[in-house]
Every structure is written in structure tokens, then in C-alpha cells.
Length: 270
Length: 365
Image 1 (cartoon, each protein chain N blue to C red):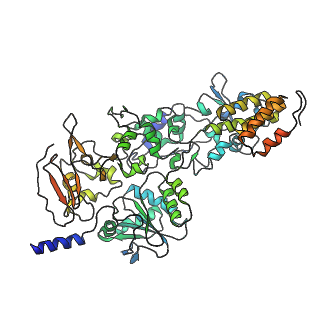
Image 2: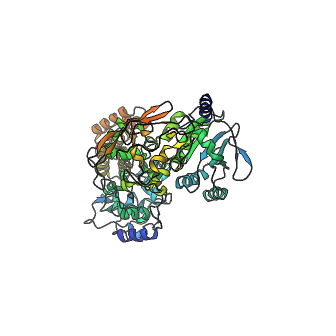
Image 3: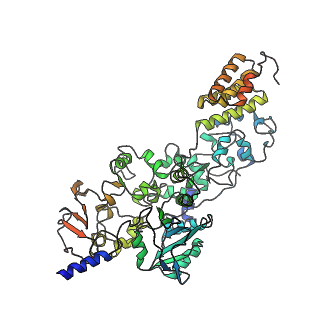
């Protein structure tokens, strides 16, 4: 009975942890693994940021990811990339995948999937970023959208090249809307400028009003003032310049236009 | 050359026939066929009686804003060296947008899609938006036409532009936002139904009430599992997953799950590393799934979100009325336990290497 308890205890101690064994900040131990190119190779390169790409053959997400990484792996200095494949991967298949995807990083095999088990890697692909001190900096499971951008931002952050705010922006980019009222308003103002230059004052004023209806701005009020000056409507022009100045007090052009004399109606303006 | 895109269906069907293995792979890049850019007569204004929208300079008869002459019969060439430069003299907001990382295409000119004078279509598009987009994006067009399961967002409201910025974006596939932000924007209503008429959850509510989210959900990556243009699999899944509670195990029927998860988690009868759901080294995923009447993942896991770790569900539907039976899963220091529901109450211990689990058990199906 006692021996059974001892055996159970020994089994417990030797049983690898299941689940996400490694968390950000934990140390990643270096190991020697067989390389697809032959011989044994260290998992980690000392003094570098290490990017560990856990992938497998015959797997569309892995192929897609490795193809993407092929164009990225040489972009940042001081980074050591390595792909780790399950131990039962036929060498020929691993080499063929590397060639097909165009990756330069070495491919290591994980006998018995021991490293997978030790680190708790369960998804394919999974990419781990390890900092120069050998601590896990990021754990990146596959994403269909912006996977590569997100990974590169994480690497740059680990290298200290970008700020936490820049990393956050890469992880959750701002909306890239198609249309914005300020954008459309700006186009109307630009068009009004051209019409003003051509002397088509009523059309110019109409465009400015469209702009103001969409998104009031200092630039649009400035343009309204300019058109009104040309129309000799000095009182209305002054009001427009005042609003423009209130919206953007440091706009030199507004100050200059406001201070220019407004010619009487019908007078020619240079 | 004017594009013949008035009726895209024959083109799409032809494209479908020419795309081998369409929709087979989750990551298949869809075919794009660039058509020659419309030039010269193809960009002429439509007769006023046909046009519903006009470019402001054209509408006010000021050809000279863009052309060297103000004679509408002979306006001559544009003033700038390129079409885009000409457009950006007013539309500099679009020029700013074009500085974003992912551009529609570096080769495109504005007039590939827009008539610079007038049009029947909003945004002065040459033709109806979906037809216009799929005239080049033939692979997507083929998917949309052939899809067994449709996604109605494609033909609703802003159509393609519901999700894509046709100019440029900071997000891959010129998406306006990360997929989750786009999807939940619509799928946050009560009473929505799927293409097969089944009720769909209000995802804002579901995710708000269940704190443990599936990784792709947490990563705002709905596209990892759903093919948004339409597809072959139910719920627009990118790959196969059994529709039913019970299904015989075959790797290919779980292609969706195994596109990220290691299939050995299910297929290996014995393990000490692949999963914590094991009794000793006996893999209990294998026990539940690899059998003729195998339990599909949904028997124990919620897909999108749940209250418990590993998204273990609280209950399972039973019988035609969908009566919910409490599973009563409890995680323990050495594994976990389920109350008597699907089978007799059972516990497992993953801290030892030999299995102590009694075989068999009474099913309550």
C-alpha cells in the first residue's frame, strides 16, 4: 500500500503540467532540439528577442502564417526566429513547407511534443515572443486578421522600439471609416476655393454652406468670409471671420483676412 | 473599354466553375481579376435624364475645375498629370485615407470605380456596388452566388461597404474595423434568425453575461471561424463542424475546430500532456468523442462564451423540447467532477498516471 502511494507521488511529480503552463513574465528555458536541417540547435539565441513559431505541416492557418512571416522575419534586427514542429513531422514535409512558404528561420522538431507540453501550447499556430532576458513577453494564438501586424508590434514593443500606446493601437486599431462628414466638408471647402478663384461667387458660397452644414470648421468659415468679402457683404464676412477665429484662434490666415479692409460692394478686389 | 458588369451573374457562375476547390480551405485567397481601367468614352457623363448623382463641378457646369477648357463639348485633358492627383485637389480627405497601411490597390485610379461626372449610383459608382466589386473580385462573387448559407449583410444597407473601406484601411482586407466590432454591431439585437430560420443570440447580451470568451472572440477575430461572404457550412462556418449533438468521430467533420486545436487532444486515447481532461493518462475527450455516437464539442463546451473556465457549459439540451439538464461540472484540485446527468456522477483525476475511472456508466440521453 505504501509503495503504491510512493509510486503515485512519483507519477504526480513527473507528470507534466497541462493547460497554459507558461504565463507572460515566466522564464522560458532553453533546450536543444533536432533541426530539420540536421544536428541539434538551441531553441533560444542569447541576447536576442526570440520568436518561437509553433506550426505544423498540412495545416492551412500555419501555411498562411508562415508565408506572411517570410516577408517579415528579416525586417527587425536583433530578433531570432525559429519554427517548432511536432516531433512526428516527417523531415521532408517540414523542409517542403519551409520552401513553399519561403521562410528562412530554422525549423526544429519537438520529440514527443515535450516542449509543446511543457509550455502548454495547444493551438496551431501559436507564436511566443521571448524577451532578451529569456522571459515570455507575449503569447499570440492565430488570428485571421492583422496577425502579422500584431506580432510585429509586439516584437517592437519587446525591443523597446514602440510605446505601450502604439502597441495597443496595433492590437485594436481605430476604425478606418469610409466616409466622414469632416472629410466631405473639406472637399466642399476645397471646391469653393476653386470657384472663388474662378469668380463663381454664388456657387462658391453654396459649396461653403454645404461644407458648414456637414461639419462647421474654421477653414469653412474662413472661406465663407473670403467669398462674402468678394461679394462686398462686409458685415457678414466679418461675422464669418469672427467665428473662424473663435474656432481656431491661432490660425494666421484668419487673423490676416480679418484685418484686411473689406472693399465696398461692387469694388474690385485684388 | 466599358466594363460589362450590368449583369454579373453569368460572369460569377463562370468564375465559380473556374475556381477549383472553392471554399474547401478556410484560408483560400479568393480570385481577383483586374479589369482594364475605364478610360475616354467610358468616363463620359451619362445623359442628365439617366443620372441621379453628379460631381459638383460637373453639376454647376464648371468643367474648368478639372479640365483645361470650360467648353463642355471639348473640355480637353485634365489639368493634372494623373487622375488621382486631379481628384485629390478637392478630395484631399481621400488622399489622407490612402496613406493608411492597406490600400485597395496601389494600381487603382479613382475612375476605376467612380464616374468623375455623374452616375445612377450613389458615390458616382459606375454600376451597382456589389456588381462593381465582384466584377474584379470574382472569387468573392462566386462565393456569394454559390453559397449554400447566405449572409444577408452583403446586400443590405451599405452592402460591401458595411464592412470594407473601398479606399484604404489600417486593418487587413481593408476592413473598417476588427471583425468583432463589425459583427457585433449588427448581431446585438434580440430576435435575429439565421439563414435556416433558427434563432440567433443577441451577442452583446450573451458576451456581457458570460465572462469566459473563446479566444477568437476575445481577439475580435470572428473571421477565424465564420466565412462572412457566404459558405457551404451551417452558421457560415469556414470549415466543417457537426451540426448535431451526437456525431460519429471523423477528423474531417471537425475541420473547423482542428484548424486551431490539436486533433490529438481528441484522437489520442492516452496522454499525459495534451489535455487536463483525463483520468490518469486516459484521455476523456477521446472517450466522449471518438465513438459511433460521439458527443460533439457543444455537449460540454459553449462556443462563444460561458461562465466557467474552458467554457464548460452549465447545462445541455435534452429531448425535442430542448429541456436543459444541469451538468454540474466542478473543477477540483486533482481534476473535476460531473453530477449525474448524461451519465452517473463521475470524477477524474489528472494528477496520477494510471486511470482510476470505472468504465461504462449509465447514459441519460
